[in-house]
Image (tube, rainbow, N blue to C red; front, side, top):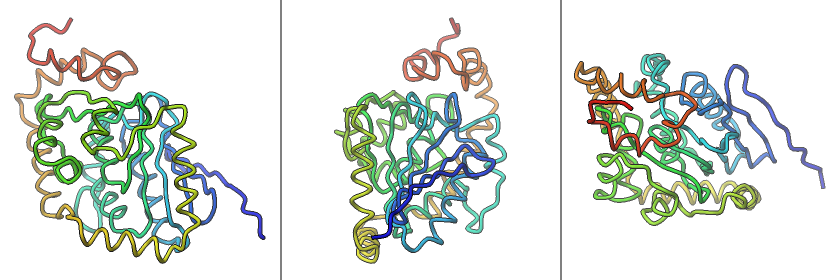
Length: 287
């Protein structure tokens, strides 16, 4: 039997590391310290992964994880976000959605292995994957409404499908941090696994799938997709427009100033405990 050698490659110019465990199993590790912000470089890495995925007929399963123990994806990088919003895609939709749609429609099974914090687009990217496993210390949060805008990267579309209408509203409008236990109970993740066992569990699960017949695994996903609702491109574009419109309202300026004073996008207490800070978002003082 031919020996299969594991290879690892840093995708040039991006914080995305690609490990090929075998022809049927890839692992994509996000490594943009200190927070794994979703910026243009990370998006470019994901777009390149999608391109390679679509050109790899033997691939059956792909795992997305983080090299940072405290952050899967913290949130959208608002400093560089304009570059993402302005980026053109063949479909005409937001590039984040383009990646999400590609993952959904591909016969490859996509798995998010979530350790640490996944907020904003972190939830949205994980929700676009087929399967989600999370460590027991993982934290989820959809905080856009609390800071005066609308989630524009997929949660308006994917969360109702995963957790139902009422719980989607709770997560989106409530803006609270949610622990892994609640996320599992709500259906946001498939299951919670202790942090020390998460990597081995996900690896063995993906390795198992990689050994099955790719024609059959692909057909199984295609048939499940046909029987489950999928967000429409119209809804995705509507969410994008709502995000841009609400994010640019002048009424948001005091909120943005408060977030900056608290340490938004800095490696500090705010990014670790966003939910607790947002309990005070309407206070006039920032101490």
